[in-house]
Length: 250
Image (cartoon, rainbow, N blue to C red):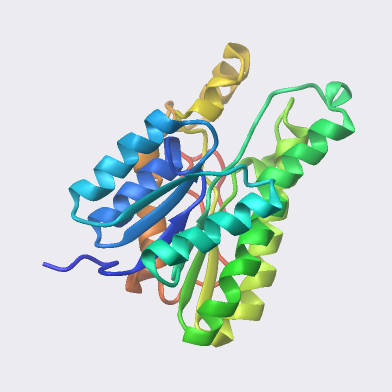
């Protein structure tokens, strides 16, 4: 039986672990071929490649720092050569790093914006012309519930993720008329390598705030990406869906 993404061509940034890996694998399970990038994680990339191929789909893994413009453009071109025109883009790659506001220097802030916001703009610029010409495309940007409520020690991260939501809404308005639907996912605290960089005190405080009294796992976020990129999500435009365990009510 055909999956919901049968024969679609998807590109996922930061796809070798965590939420990105779960999304890439879920897409393959639904019938999509998947290209994904990673930054210095060949073992994770190999595991995700094997998982995608295990569903009988084509996989491409590429080393790419998404803040490097030339590397991004090479990755995009390689993905389209390998799989064909990209129809689904998931902007997932991101960085964190808990720091008091006073300790965040301009270089740290610029790097956070470059990876967590500017790169999304760049990938969308590469995706939009082909998607518009074909009059079909799906772009999903990974934000965070912290874009809405903020958090101590993550000023730069919260600012970048709030920008992701604004970018998503503006792109959605511009592209929807050409059949390109842009939405976002704002996960709550999820057990990934990114969360491992937070202090135990930070995580303990966050755990007390959650009505569900636990953190999420990547496989609980991936179904939202499948929804937004399949025909089930055809009436979602400029939305930010929030699987977050009750951390934020929208």
